[in-house]
Length: 212
Image (tube, rainbow, N blue to C red):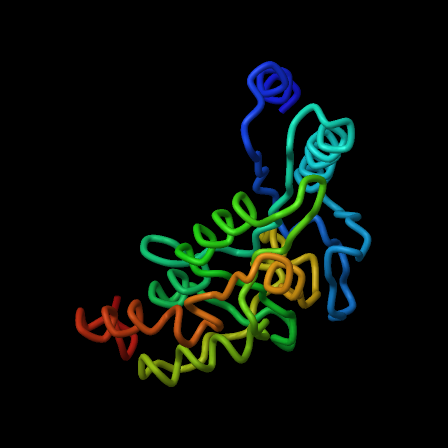
């Protein structure tokens, strides 16, 4: 990013947006977080994201590059959606009591959020790109099970949990700032609308009732 910003400083664009991640929020208590909440991730990858964000914001503050930050939640859509793919393959597991919050956004809404930040966002600002409705892992898996005619996945074993790299945080991410500051409005406000097409495709291909 230092090299990118150096180059942009000599060739300044009208706007520059860095796509970061909501994983920079390291909260584990299930509370709501927004752009004013501490970005204190507990992973090395998260620390790299925060350090990169800092470079972009410093460049914006000095007027060198018109930078903005878009923190993107878990992306799903055509060809994406890790937990959904695990469910179809019969590999999904309920972690603990399943109460951990999942924050998601459809691929197409990421694109529109990025456009909104580039065209209507403000330099030096941070925005969260996430849908309107966080969902607990258990609720999401139960919804998939009901729609696809499958049983709920079994509880995760200790070995399974030890292999997991994700699932360390537990928070609900707000998108209010992106909505109010730029007028952004997601096409898929929740997982229900966003996964409707994928669920219909799975039903049409016969990936139900334990088949995949």
